[in-house]
Structures are given as C-alpha cells and as structure tokens.
Amino acid sequence: MASTRALDVALGASAGGLAGIRRAAVPAALVGAHTAGVTALSRGEVHGGSTATARAVAVGTAAVATASAVLGPVLGNPDPRGPRRVRPVSLALSTAMATWYARDVLRAQLDAARTPDAATVRRATGQGIRGFVPLQGSLVAGRGRPMAALGLAASVPLGRLAMRRVSAT
Image (cartoon, rainbow, N blue to C red; front, side):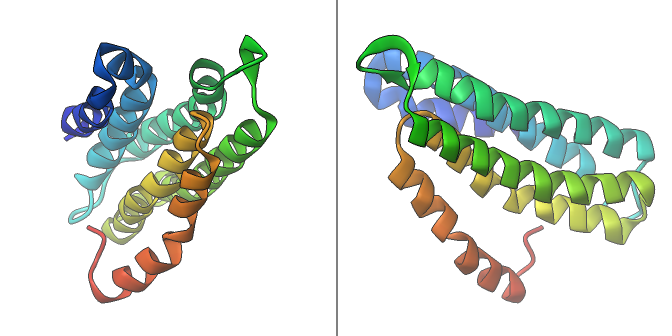
C-alpha cells in the first residue's frame, strides 16, 4: 500500500518529465511513510494492536510532519531572488498544515499507544486516513502552491460529512 501511494505521487509528477519525478521524490517518500504507518496500525483494528506498534507509528508521524514542514519548502520552492530562499507565505502555510497533521494524527496514535484496544486503534487508523489531507496540503504549500493547499484544507468539512455516512476504514 505504501509503495503504491508513493508511486502515485511520483506518477502525478511525471508530466514534468524526469525533473518532475525528481522534485516529487521527497513528497512521495513522505506520503509513502505515512501510508506505511497507517497500514501497520490498521492491522489492530479488529482484535487490538500493540503499544510498540502505535509508538513506532507515532514516531514516524512526527518525523513525517517535521519533514513536510521543513523539506518541502526548502527543496521545492525556490524564490526567484535566489535558489535557496523560501516564500514566506508558502513556508507559513506548509508549517501550519504540517502542525494540523501532526496534532490530529499524533493525538489519535498516542491514544492507541496508551490503550491499544480495537476501537482506539480503529479511531487512530481513521484519523491517519483523514490526515492525508493536511499532509498533502503541507507538501503542496511547500511547493509554492498555497491556493491549492487552501483548497485541500477547504475539502475537510466535506470529508467529515461523507465519513459520517461511510467509515473511513
């Protein structure tokens, strides 16, 4: 599942040729890492999980959140005035969305680490799935597309409404 999601991100960038795929390497790796964590946690949705798994996934989530806030803007959004400058609005939005991702997803994963019963792990898995939106928003903002990132953020209420009718997992 993780490799498929990472390849999906890379394939989306393939319209830009080899350069596009290279630019997508970090976002693809981060989306893949997040997917691997959600998948590992999801194995405990029926019979409960383990504290060790939930803790490991939470550490991975913290690393992904940090990397999405830092690496995305630094690697993907050079300012025209210089190759290593980052546009302040992109940096701020990328950081805000990475913080949103970390807050929501980590909270649920730490709950699962404390109480790894099936219901808590299921909630953490669902929150991990919903966490793709702010994670992707952070990565998109970091690539200099703040309006697209805001569009992703605006989709969250629709997702919540849909998940009241159909489970995220």
